[in-house]
Length: 404
Ligand SMILES: Cc1ncc(COP(=O)(O)O)c(C=O)c1O
Image (cartoon, rainbow, N blue to C red; front, side):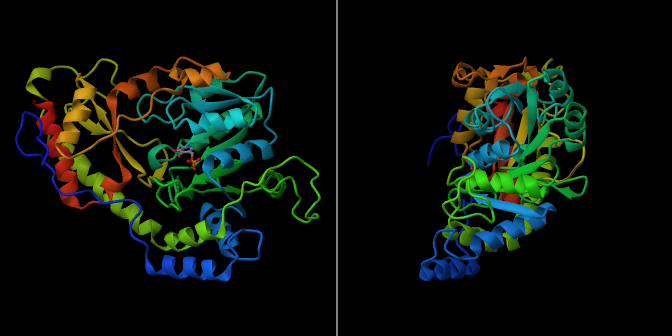
């Protein structure tokens, strides 16, 4: 048993749920059927990829879907299909996974890194509007941690400036905004099935869109420049093989039947964490005002990061917590780990990654993302699949460490 903060017994000794969960019977059956069919690729007449894309499109409230190798490629293909390329600028949030920006680089365009709302940490519509230049052609809105970005505000900016909108829904399968599913709220939406995601096949991605011509263009990018009704060796435009396999689709398709149940479980867990956190007293050594740069003054030392306006269903890919007292975060993360409650320090602001700026990305001032990189802690998705005891353990460990 590892020693906890100040020695003693860790708050949590039992393992947290693992991810992915064990295969269920429906997955086992479909994967076996695909394996035995020998039709493992998506161009061999099997139906798993087609059924998966149809189901995802339906759930996203749009007619079209394209299954791809991963979401990075999905974002790239969506941008290319929407006509984004060299010379263009694409606005991306500063607080997101690096792939949101590297997909823009892959398309040959310039990522413009823009600040997030200081409270909900999603792309700020006002900062987006301020960053638009004559070269801007698209915005990538990220539904961070499973809660939707404020799409009405971002779509309004896009409409004013004639910009395309790509939703990065890599973390938000099943989330809704003002009652409407994410993914179908912009020109194209992209989901990820990478191993940490709410639905996973180890890797994978899926693009959804509303417009027939946009679908045809993105499909061509993902299918070596072919056209939907063209010849196998006809390649009127440049494209790549970005396809998902039937085996991956067979793992994913049955998952859709339990996705909502798993989201409900995570939301119940998040609500329990919120209640438990509210009961943690301010540490005596930190009495007084919350961090001056910390938005939303509060008397609790740690709270949930609030969801953006318009969130009607948060898919809870992550639970983001905000620390409202000055505290050595590296110590806190190490001590939480020792207590058996490993948390994550989250993203650095994208503009601080030299690889991106050296590759040509431009970063606007991002105080919101900067503060988040010091004050925000993540509870990862597998932990959110634990029962009420897990929620209590998180709060108990935080209270113990903050009082240390
Ligand atoms: C917000 C976001 N965008 C894009 C990606 C890239 O997805 P993938 O790993 O499927 O390429 C991820 C996660 O991996 C992500 O979290």
